[in-house]
Image (cartoon, rainbow, N blue to C red; front, side, top):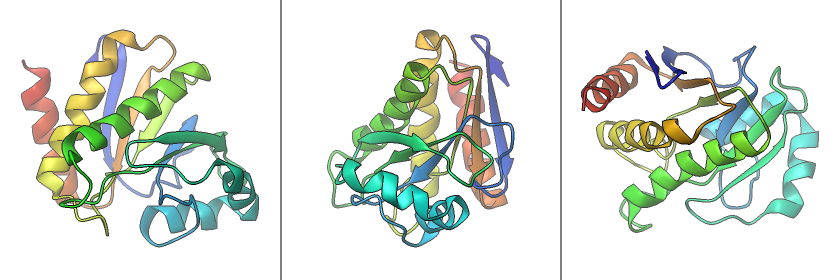
Length: 176
């Protein structure tokens, strides 16, 4: 779907296999260390240089985002976002929305044309996928008019159910 000159793509796939995208977003932990889920996959694919570059940038707080090089990834940049732990970090909806907005602000500041997001906070952080999809899509749509360089926003989801929730949210919120 294209809105305000920005293509919004929803795909199932692997966040670390997104050639042609300027920055992939890492669903990071506060210390920006390798871990499980998306953070582990991003660090494994990017190699040890990513952890070394991240070390002086940590810790970050829920809602924060920082940018690094992509190292061994096909992407020149990684934007690291710390999403909220559902039921613990409050207000979780605003913190999650802030992750998406700050990631796009960083992409703009660096003149990037494309960004790929995972479903932030939906893994071990426990955010229910239907609610996370709603917050993510709403946050991205709220930024569209401000974007000058970013022309493609891709949501890379690991399963069809997540894709369906994001598609439902996009169709409903874009129609408003």
